[in-house]
Image (cartoon, rainbow, N blue to C red; front, side, top):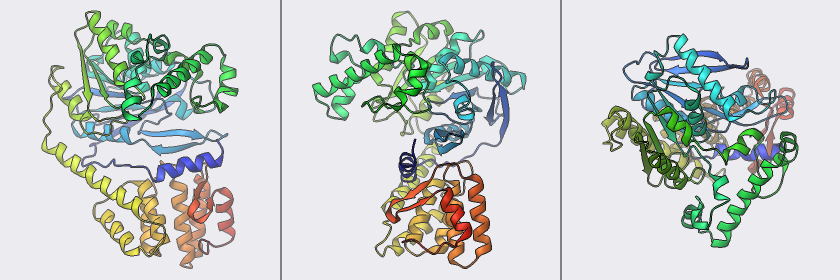
Length: 490
């Protein structure tokens, strides 16, 4: 991916609606590493390891490379350095479920730790990684046995979760699939009519697609599936990932073995084999794993006599599960011994929801501040509100810092960039550079150079572009600032 694509991605990150802030943090987090079946070392963690009154939740994330902390790495450079971004759903899930008293076990995905050094995995590789993770949790005394474990899979992780069930000898307490555990494209390609296509209703009602557009969408998926099944891995890596064919936009981290299998994978046999309580929860506006596909999985389980499944639809929710309902639904299902998903919000839930609303309000206000035009009073008011509320969203603090600088509020901008200095995220280097800029403008050259040198040391290989000033902050820019002080933007 060239720098233009990366900076576009960074731009979307900086102005993304991010509303993950929580009232409660876990009491403790235990970090460690796990050895996989093929000798890889993956970092892992358990939040709230001392909370043994509730089952441990093992969370399996989606297809994008991710670390154990809930950050994702959608792109990387030729040297294997990953651009790390916050994954809002993961952070929300970890914090909220931990605040409800659940221990949360997570492990980094192999494609995050080894993005360019090993072949892309198959589903069975990911499932075996989780199996080894479970064995480590038991041997380390963090998990009594599988009966104390709930496996939760999100998006592609729901596919992996069902694969895990198929290889475990001792099954967990329960399984929760946040998605369908089946992409269903293989069967869709043989659907007798468009009404049988799992995306028809969504495309028609949410995007106002015509019948011709819906048919074109299905034809494209079927053509992609045909291409995948009739090529080898080398062609996939060298040709298909670089194709400009509409709809063939494969990310560089995607796996040939997973992409060709996903559309044909049937989770039902593994779910029947496990024979444990199962919750399938899905948003009715999920276009990535449509509700209709999830319902087909559920109906097929019922048709095979499986009586331990619960199917719950969250109205007006999408693939990212932006509504709060997800958390009390899961909690109610587990605490009611799988009998109900009918929840009543607790006071703590209402407080967290209020906090979400306040964060959303702040994010909207930050986004509304123009880069120029005599808006310093408005920008200062938003800064003061963010400070009073202990706003802790690094990416939005960075955006606010740039806008405060644009409105000549340099001290407030510097404080904002300090608040944006989260070393786990790809934006970290840019926050250091901007702090150096502001020190230069104050005439504190030694401090500025020190900040530039720190930024150069952590530069991830991905520039950031401020299009409104035609300014690109990359390695060359940082090296130049070490030689020549920053004197302002054009």
